[in-house]
Image 1 (cartoon, one colour):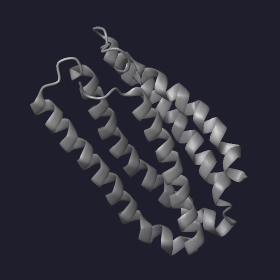
Image 2: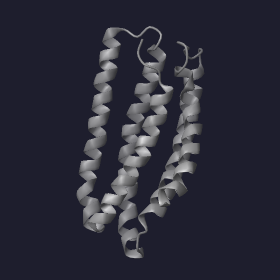
Image 3: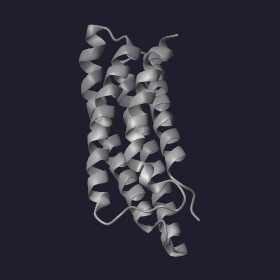
Image 4: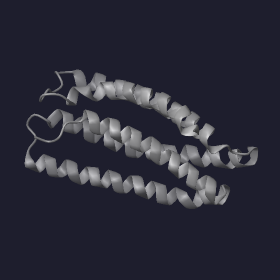
Length: 169
């Protein structure tokens, strides 16, 4: 199956991506002084690698004609830039959670939850905003395939994050 060709490289890439977030997992561990800046730097580098891998996966999965590719890729790049902005919010949320994990107040927990729901709403808004643009340049089946690929990649990332980020205590 075509999916299995790209699933392993993405899983390996995401395993590497999860390494910097491991400082928030475990038995109540918290980052040492000065670590968050280094970790954010590592996450940014990993995000760049994942973005390159993501584009390669989309390229293989989409099987675009030359004409479709010419109109699809500029929209794709704009879409990914908007999704990166949403990802920046998620990174900030995770960083804030990690910094407050040991002594998380009810007030901070509420703020983090509200921000998380805002991030989810923003992610859906980007998808809805770009859908008509993709529909103008690709046939319906290819637009559906593209959204399926994006969803699968997002779920893999979310699974890795869920595995590494501990529950509120």
